Length: 126
Image (cartoon, rainbow, N blue to C red; front, side):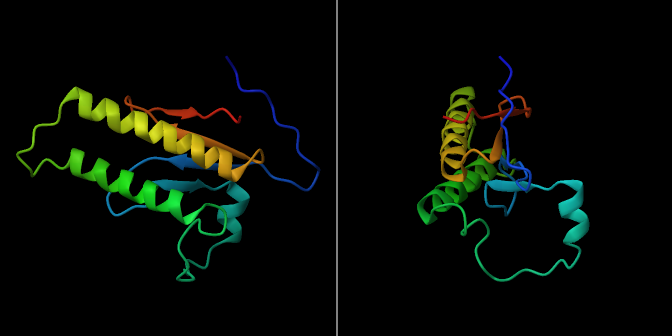
């Protein structure tokens, strides 16, 4: 079922976030629009934890832990056998975290999550 279109005020912009794991990442990514990318060409970082201005520290810690678990699961250097069940549990946890991200960010954000097939899917706003 298609996601309903969110009506915004004339000065509001729909932002997007992606919950996905990657090596040395935080588990949550900002999907920048073309205008945001052009406006931020400095490449400087403030030293403030990414997303800490809009997401709770508890959720950020859980996203970091989830991201690190995904990196361990994907690491081919270990002899630990990864079962289908382990991967399913991992992606199910990612979906639950993405729902919490959507809840904390609110209705002016669209949150996507990477699923088991490496496809991005939208999280429904409550």
